Every structure is written in structure tokens, then in C-alpha cells.
Amino acid sequence: MSRASNTSEIDAFATRVDNPEDADVAHVRKAAPDCSDHARGFLGSMHKGSLEFEDAEITRLAELTSIVSTVLDVYLARPAVLTGLESVAALIGSFGTDDAPLLEVIFGDAEPEGRLPFDLPPTMAAVIASRTDVPFYTQAPLFSFGFGLRYQR
Image (tube, rainbow, N blue to C red; front, side, top):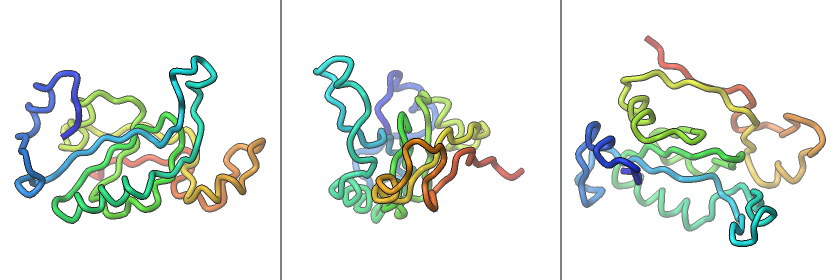
């Protein structure tokens, strides 16, 4: 399960286990990749660096998904390259959601809402090839500006 400001919020939805082998599903929360150096003040805190997850992180998630179905929530403070994360059972892009509302969506007690405010590029090469002065210029985005899902009822 994820880190929580209020552990009882999560415990209202699920029973925690110590080993992934004992779980029915795993829930992982990650932030979009960022190489900011907050110790350097304002300029150091600006988002920078690759939008791709490191190979070690992709491998770690793949190992977890080989053990248990995994729901991955990526906090999209900036776009991210999500290619390579196909082994997860479900992928959620969020924008600072607290644990309880996110779990309500995961468990079907609430509807997902929202739309992407930017394109999600397929690769870092696509980011480099895009024109930074033209909005939504990403070639073949993995998910386009405005994308969002709704439950079918």
C-alpha cells in the first residue's frame, strides 16, 4: 500500500500484509521522474531532467507485478514517459490526490474524474524531437491532452 498521512484511511479499504505474495493486489504511488535539487532554492526546485523512469525502478515494478496484480498511481506534477510500465494491472495518473479519494476510485466507490492537461510522450526521444514553442506537438503521444477515463455503468 502507499504511504499515508492518515493510516486509518487506507485501513478502511484494505488489509495490509507484509509480503506481496500474501496480497490480492498491490498499490504503488510514484511521482513522475524529476531531478530537481530543492536544496538550491527556487531555481533548484524547478522540474528538470529526464521524464523516463530509471531502468532499476521499471525492473522493481516488473518484479512486483510478477508476484501480485499491481495498481500504479503516478503523480503527474509534470509529464512522464510511462512506456515500460505495461506490466501493471492498472495505471492511474493523479495530480496530488489524497489516499482516501484515490482508494474510493480504485475500489469503485467513486468515479474517476479529470483530464490530462498535457500530452504524455511515448519516449524521451519524442520529447527531444518535439517543438517546445508549439503546444501539443508531441509525435504519437502515449496519451493526449484531454484524455481521461470514466467507468461504464
